[in-house]
Length: 405
Image 1 (cartoon, rainbow, N blue to C red):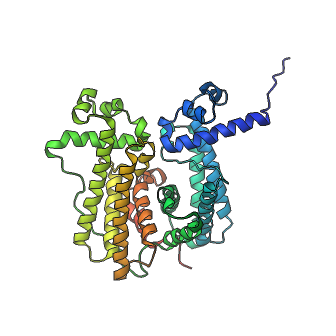
Image 2: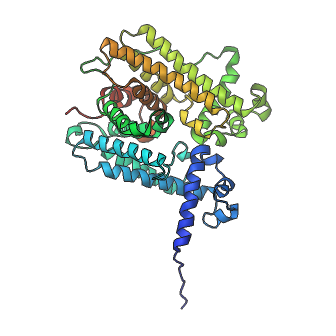
Image 3: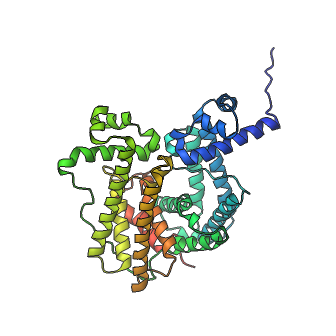
């Protein structure tokens, strides 16, 4: 009878493995799953790539370890919130824990949080299971006697709204001093639980005409933009190769290069198309609406429905993280401009009494995050239709995710 000896990892082994994951998280956050390489991770630690392979067989295993570490960190934040006596208290505890963690990150007292923008591109069963379990824990923060009449799909939509706000926060949080993160948390909490709408304000968004850009003579170019947008949303910048984009349209790579000289040019065009759709929604809503709240609700409803229709999606802002760094600043500046436009509309609503007095800059970023995350809604509320999304997802954002005390 033979006995197999199981080697117990040494302390040094675990320390080096943890250091590799920590380094990989920073590369993953900057370049995405497809763009991360073992050589990049190794170089940060003065190792050769084979030194990383000793601990992780391949890039996919290392990326999975990064995501699982991030999920573990978020579960720790959720755990701090679960002791709250009601929904409002639990949401506040979670947000306070999150913004405190980010402050400690900047002080070098905590490890970076993993960015989950392209977690689905990895297609790892263990990561997907852990991610779903984390989402379910977020959803339980909204469960209680005060929400007994809220349906399960509606609770899922509220959980998505909450987690999406913290996922988006790193995009704009740098505008604030670290000492003010507690103040920022309070303002995010106020909008999360009580919404933007003033008490008693009517919920009456107006249906807009189609937001799909006109095709005409540029129909073939529009098809390329749609296919590229869908692939980038699914697999990130690096995963959406010229070959895959061409294959989705059943055309040759030559046809691709007939319309776009480079892939970067196509990505910029996809973002421009998204900005064009959002600007069109803003302009149309301003023409037909009679209050700031109605304008904002009309824009948000139209864009979320547009996103869920699927045939001509908006490019998710999260795609920026894996796009080449050289084109990121100009695209971020365009998102900032849209956010400033939303802030101006929130100010209009506060002035006419339809919107609560809130921090307009924080509110604008939260609105952007909500619209951006709509592409994920079907994962957490299976079978949701574009029309149902207004009641399940958009309206709770404006009216608040927690019952008033």
